[in-house]
Length: 120
Image 1 (spheres, one colour):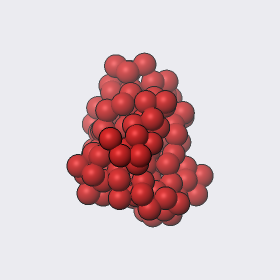
Image 2: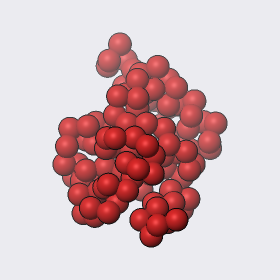
Image 3: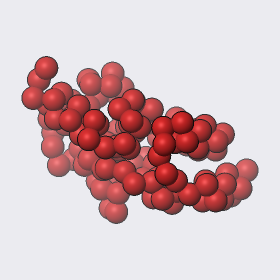
Image 4: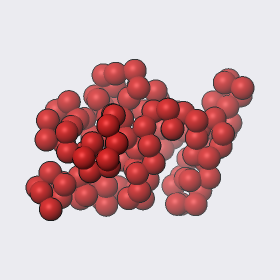
């Protein structure tokens, strides 16, 4: 395993929820990263953010690691969930709630419902 893959694996294993993104959870630097971080922040999810713009090895390595070509990428309990479009769909359908519940991840159910109401 390469050093980059080991770093990615360590990060994913050390945190219940990890978002590999452009920018940070408080200052996203692309619209897609902003959307996913915004959903997670609004739902009160405690997540680790990894700024791929700060580390070119991680930026290219995460795409190979997940076999997914785009950023952001969300991991929950060590499993790759998806990128912006998938997270948006899962949020609106309630699947993201179920994923968090099944994995013991605490979130604000009222906030999740408000997102769906606002987009329904």
